Image (cartoon, rainbow, N blue to C red; front, side):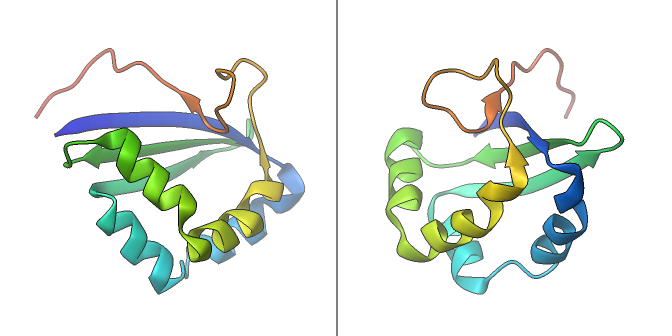
Length: 109
């Protein structure tokens, strides 16, 4: 198992809508997340900075392939089309990334 964390901005005028859609994530999207070997997935919001922090545990054997399968899923693409306009990616993210990856500096089980 490997842990992943990422951050992204959230447009202030979109906070209520972002919370609303995440209170009822589409079942097909949830199923794809699980099929992509993601467990213990959470998204946290820090206001007033309007930063989202996502955390998940990956339990598969090929993260790149599982993430590619999720990205290719039509229903997930529809979900992202709803969510992405609400987000404000960080200017410092890696080229090609939407969410900016983070480095784990401490962990306690």
